[in-house]
Amino acid sequence: MRPVPTCILSSGQAPQALHGHALDSYVQIGSLSKTLTGTALAQLATKGVVQLDAPVEQFLPVPPGTGITLEHLAQHTSGLPRLPPRVKRRDPYAAFDHAALQAVLQRLNTLTTAAPGQIEEYSNLGYAILGAALTAAAGMSYQDMLDHYVLAPLNITEVTSTPPPDRRLHSRGLFGRPRRPWTMSGAILPAGGLWATPRATADLVTALLVERKLGEPALSWQRASTLLWHNGATGDTSVFAGAMPDSRWVLIHRLTGQADRTDELGIKLLQQAAPRACAES
Image (cartoon, rainbow, N blue to C red; front, side, top):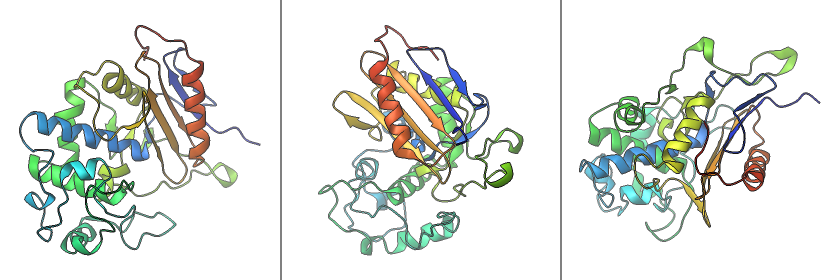
């Protein structure tokens, strides 16, 4: 069996590139993008541009009275379903462009399955709407907002929705041909469409979760006891990032859609790593 190209960076070891997975090539990070959208929300709130409890209709053309706030969207408690309408199995978000998002917004009150704040249901649709609300509030494109409020303050580059084609790393299929990645540069971008180098992603993990250069971690990070983590997966990629309070941290990116196995590897490495006073990147 051909080994899965894997990149691992963690606090217990020097950065590693396994099976040719280069640290300076761009890879899709899937839903790890949500942590950057959530961090942008936190920074906009800190600077007074938005309030966490602001209703979504303050920024977007949705029916009044949905009760959905920015905080609900960030915490997956908006009552919205996991996926936008009419998602297909192959390249599922290709058709979910900004026109499709506008159509969803106009009937947002008909899509909720529970009242806001009642239950937690992981929602890519919710994060697409959150990203749209934040860009409207900031008066910038999503990439410009991310650069201004998150990446530039951390002095991190190599995170983008449009990486140079010659630096993109793809999984390979029959006869070694590169597989076509999912199209996620449209309205779904804030939920899962970013590309980043493993090097830059590791810098983000340590800056946001270990050094906490932008304050407390955003609401978008998942919490399991003292572990802060998030994962992501597209058609042929999967990623896991996490950190413990004692400065242990890990980032794994694999060119495979086997997300459960990627999560398992991340947890195992965190358990094996020795606590450190500071993390390496």
